[in-house]
Image (cartoon, rainbow, N blue to C red; front, side, top):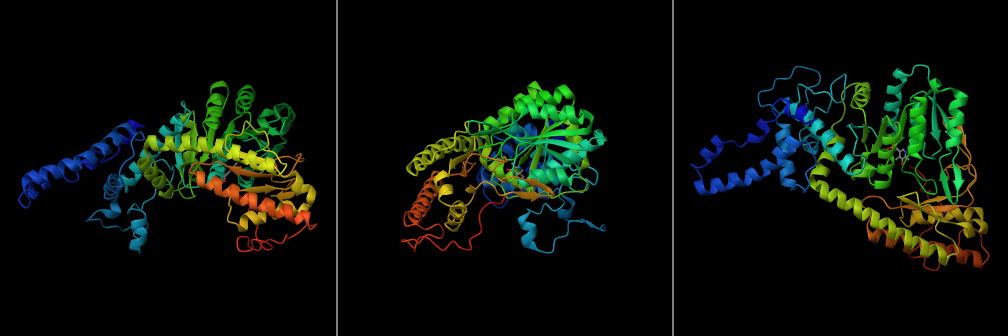
Length: 510
Ligand SMILES: *Cc1c(COP(=O)(O)O)cnc(C)c1O
């Protein structure tokens, strides 16, 4: 990757925009001692750019926004749309009608890739190409730091996780023309399910097994399905790390071994797993002990950027390149730009600090949810293998009435608690023609209704405290409703604080 960055046209001219001659000319206008000091000031920024270009790694220390902006402006003026003498006569010349739009993209207009490969260098846009290569190189560095030490290659795609999984399956199709099934340990999330349907494959759903409170991969059922269908007819195993409790990350290591044994590819959905050292460790171990062809993670869920991008990574550079070659045409550079800016302004220290805080917040959320659950005769479900998501039982509420559980969901939603997820059992749902019993609960029959909350990157102690305070109020209100013999909408004394929830939409999506 380093040599690739260096061999790009113009990488060295990046470091000499305000060159010696310009400084000399400046000395005619301003005292030369001041100019010298100014040029030294500039040099400090340039040294950071040089280190980045030479190493292709995420800087340890956070960059100032001024260094980042300097860098982006210098990249942009290397693209043909910003050449002063450019005369474009093609159909795609990077013309932008709105100045606001141009500035929103730092005048990087050409996107990334070439018609045949999203990772290819674009001759019209040396700056954007450099941005693309550097971003992929820095993101790979961060994936290694986060725990997948032997990852060999990755690239950012301007599509969210589901579509990126689709791209992986479509790439495998060419290698396994006979295969039409994908073995998929059940996870009740629609985009990862649809990623298989959209690619034209038939998902073979493997129900999870209950161990204590946890829902875990049924390895025996996976083996039996492989025998049943025949390895050649199976495109891949599609496993999942990050997920809602009480499901826990799949047994990635064992699945990877099964894949190696039967020569079946293995794609891992690591949607929000980069932020968890446990999820990353599972992937690393899986690759060490068995077979993982690619693992896919969301940019927004792991790097605190807007929705729109994912990272496809793997252990074999040429397979990852095959996937990038499957992408038809050019692509938006926005997700790459966002993650590049983010990682430069955080530095590895900043990112690692966020990961550390997330872990601490998980312990805090867990102990606080446990306490609150006990006040209401409920309990924190025992799901030690899930490093991000937690669940508390809602048995009492469920016994009170069916509606009470969904009502809790609406109440939390109207109180502006987002992301908490109330799961009542028994509602079947059909997704792309497949019916899932008790959809959302990852199992046909779980033993109780429950409420989820997650400790994800960027969460603050105040978020946890406010969530628990509001949850406490809702549970109290519902309990009062029961005591005075009502099943549905309880009358609230603190009306000011509690809005009507009759037509509130339940927060169940995503
Ligand atoms: C977020 C997520 C996805 C993908 O969703 P996108 O909207 O496509 O990014 C897939 N699987 C799981 C488990 C997720 O959490």
